[in-house]
Length: 261
DNA sequence: TTGTGTTTTATTGCCTCC
DNA sequence: GGAGGCAATAAAACACAA
Image (cartoon, rainbow, N blue to C red; front, side, top):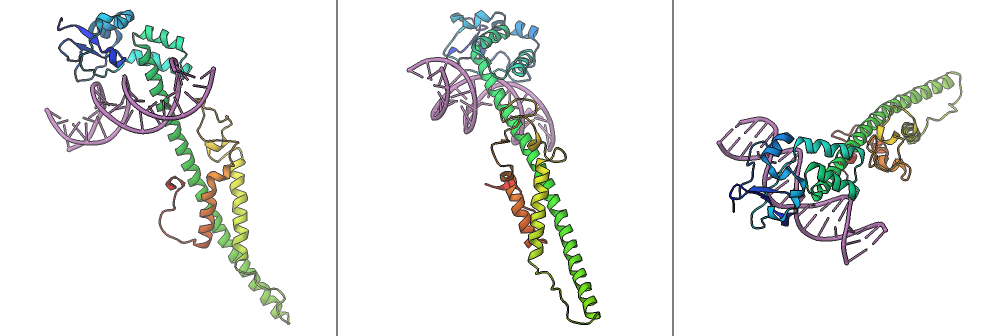
């Protein structure tokens, strides 16, 4: 066999290519080539029919991975942008056009969908995290406001009592029981948070997106919209709010929702 | 140059759909 | 049951700091 012969391993279902001595055509380095260079250095790319030519096969040699050229990737990206799933006919056409095996095109799309999904999940994570942080900051300011109002109530009650005593006679009004005030504030908090979730501006982009649950590239998300009570996502916030009511000066990091198991 | 972390290409095994 | 999708994973290719 000609030692300079280029072939690929059919058992691998790819066009992994090696010269006859078993060395890959481009060993090491950064094999970023344009199509012209590719065709010069990869005779197997010159005709897609050759990819199916049994004479090109040699089953005994090891296989190596081969990166796609920027041109191939560009074309695949464009196809993916148009439609992220491949019809069989489109797969065959694309494979022919790019000088690849249909299997490679399918694999590329599969991996591309996986990368896309990862990106979406990362974005959802970021949105939820910032939404959570923003809610937490609301909780903080509401708690402060609550403390202020409680102090005001105490002060006004005292003033009232003083006036009643000064006017002669026993005070008619009793101070509010201490546990009443926190309940009021939690109620306020829930109302306010719900307002944020349902209002059109200022809150998380995730919960406010108008798209349905299906995954469409611009503005889609893995977060369900209508079918799940949104408060389920934020229930730990409410719990945190209540906890903060009871232990408002606890030090240390709040336990983020992303830390749940 | 080399060690190491990341990205890309490809396989495997399981699942669903027709 | 075959085709195609996905998750998990392997391993080559690549990037980059030391």
